[in-house]
Length: 467
Image 1 (cartoon, rainbow, N blue to C red):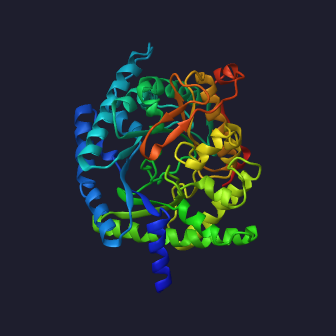
Image 2 (image 1 turned 135 degrees about the vertical axis):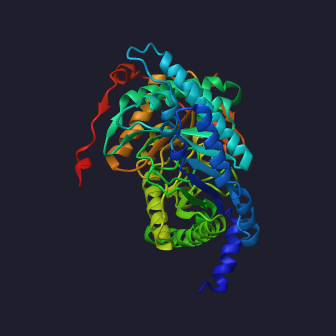
Image 3 (image 1 turned 90 degrees about the horizontal axis):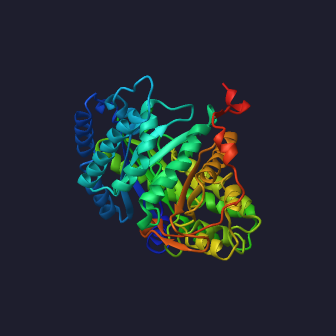
């Protein structure tokens, strides 16, 4: 039974501590939309998304009213479009001169426009799944979709893209790494008037999960059901407030406090997920308990680390503090729901976390320290703005370093870099909304072009042979 104390405690979390359901994300399989005719394929895709998700926003708003729980975003994830579009692409010629890739990329962009129209029709703020899975190599469709990403993201409002280019089982596709350095620079240039905004809608993964409800990296994995509801819960402010009550306690008590708090937050997410699943008549997938910050005051992961006793996020001790936080969040969530998944843990996106921004601006936090922290957090180098002049090879090398962390440690890592055109170290880029404000961070100036130019595939580590 839930006691009165717990009810009042949850109300306080919602009212004063920024507790919310960050997203209800409907995952939809589009495998049955594949068609040799691109027009028919896009029509099927549009009809299926608008049919399955027609009530998603309405039901989300109903649940908000009925339970008094804020649901910030309603979103959709779909089957990686490279898999769906493959049947619609022109046949490659034996001796291609690049024309095949250009023509195929134009077809992929038609799919992106269709996704955008469908997202607008049902009222969701983002649709994820303009994606390719290339950890072991490129299909023709993968190559076409990856080449189309800059134009697709620049030309659409709500489409998000992702590329999985490494896994513990497959190693790292360095050809894809090299290509993504170029793609990110091109995407930034095409949206230069918005500070390179297209890059904020593009995530590069190692070990991407199939059931992630958070954007920009969400896609509906091929092992998932026909249609599911995944819920992402977030509550950095709740955790910080809980830790304020145990100031001076040892770190064992800190971990226990975080674990108990994560249990309560996840239980609320489970309630919303079950309710949405029942009202929409689709399967319940997972609850993702991720401490995803926002630019709002009191909604910061960095402030949790500072509440533990660090002067600033980035100080020595930040990595171990984040490791404690991430582990305790997962332990508490796992006790509250049998179906915790996605990226559950703690996110450290720079531009979306007010205290992270302050740490960068005062010199406490740099990319090297962030990379170390990604070894123990839930994602990776997220929403980091770098100078617009950063060479594509340097961007690729940053991606490769992060992929190596994921592959060797058998965890998900990701990169969302924004080389802001015309901006230099110390400048600030305003993205607005949940994307926040990005201070331009310094990258290592020494070259890596010869290394990236080698290409090929870095083999999987020996522990990938576990069976």
